[in-house]
View (spheres, rainbow, N blue to C red):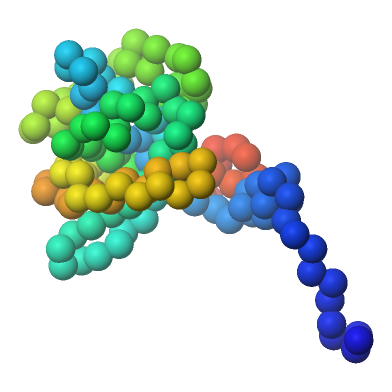
Length: 167
């Protein structure tokens, strides 16, 4: 074995979580309407573009999320890209068991889904595909509508297990 050779060990869940905490990620709130028109939603940092043609995005949803069944059976969902002023809503939508739609700061999309008012961007999505992935489900959405916030604003990011802001 040379000096350059390193011992590789299997990553524990704690090691993996610590490593991923060092990757800064944008923050979004994802919303839909569940059975009987009940609004459902969650905060996510596992969000990215997938394709330009057709316009596809992906977001990962924990299988243990309160809103899991609503999202795995919905036909449409909305994604709100959060700015620095949306930290209270990010925390609210990330809190398991919280009444996520109890406060102000939300407005309906043209399709009637709840979204974060004043978001940096809003995306209306049709469910394109879903894939199981460990303890999460990957939701692929085909973007059917885009609304940009009036002021580009500063994005919120998640880093080292807390919401942060870019300077």
